[in-house]
Length: 588
Image 1 (cartoon, one colour):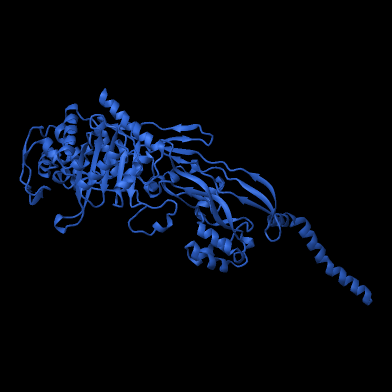
Image 2 (cartoon, one colour; image 1 turned 30 degrees about the vertical axis):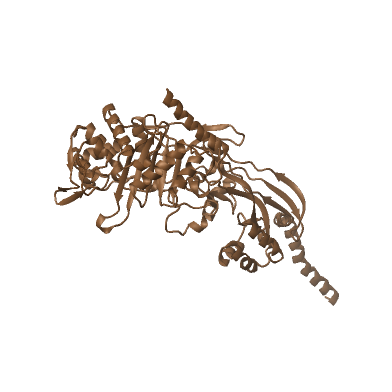
């Protein structure tokens, strides 16, 4: 074989792998490289998923989407992730390592845009624009920003949004959720996330090798989700939050005839538009104290003690007991809040003055078993069934674990209730015995504006109280406000019925704070609102004063707005209608 033949064969053998490689690339790898090429030249810019609105009972917005700006990036276009993370960390108020982890994460599709940061402020927006030449692959993208007009005042009720986690993505991909999307994390936002969430839209564009947009190939419009209408009166919600101030505690206002929640406030609260800074706070701003805070009811439980003692015949209204300020029971001393005592008192005066010695004696006479049984009949110790996540049941102990009738009679011992249960109890007294399921959601409305579902009153049970006992109890509750321990809750022209309560956190000699509470309903003869105010630390008179201030502005809305400058005509008109309604009742 000469040299020429050898070279020919060598060339032939050399080109065989090349031809086979071309065949493999052309036939077998064609789909892969075609997809890679298209992804490199065709980008789909997905929009945020629009959410439905959350509205109060009068159509006032509590949560809605508005146009904003997000910071996004395309993984394939990133040239220097470390530099980008270092530049952006200070302005985004986050750690460089956290940003770098997001930027260098392995993505199934490196050409798909990802959101790095939601809702840029004007300062952040300008910073990114000024440093765009150093942030290759990172850009500002128009998006939707969830806004909450009432801010902290309704955060524990409405909730907030948070970025979907990797674990959640595994089960939510079928629902159209993508990395970086926001989902409901608390309150109504969480409970009705699947209904509030709409359909994502987007734009398909062709780009050049540098990622610059050449032309739009197609668009798909977004579609908002359903809107949720709440039973909340936004004006009353704001008033309650304002009067509670920064005191740790809660306010629950409820319609005694329907069970609709008119206001639900828990403090401390968080900013639903930026909840992250509150995550590490020790004062538990994310705890909904109104439905998950557990408290000894204190003297509010005297409502149950009264009903049990009168209904079982353990006492008569006219019986008098002497209060010298202290009594000995077994091997312990039992004190009244009034050190010098109340003297000889009968039922109504003892209730109005919240005399511990009187109620201690009638509690012992009634017995622990009866007190606990009537508490259960009233719905205490079980969840109310409110349509909010995280409700606690409270605790009504067995007789042997209760601490005895003496402690139970004044709401101490092993009893635990939530502020919502206190409000439900006083609402049950106000309406004559109906135990209603508290409702926060009034109706669900489709994006087209039609009512998908409407919720009405739901009866949980009935707490039988004889007419004689009920009438006597209501008279005593009015005396609490007119001449007793709840005088701070008085409202001119509006008769209020209520009961103060003080639960000791520790023995009085340690001088640790007590938890003050006040429950009430008004107007006394034809109730349209029942309420519980519970303070984590404070006197019952302080709780009564807060309740009085709330009721005063509820029934007498100021003509000029003095509530942070954001009242709407609709809110004022709604409150005015309530006042007119009460005036009409007086003339009947």
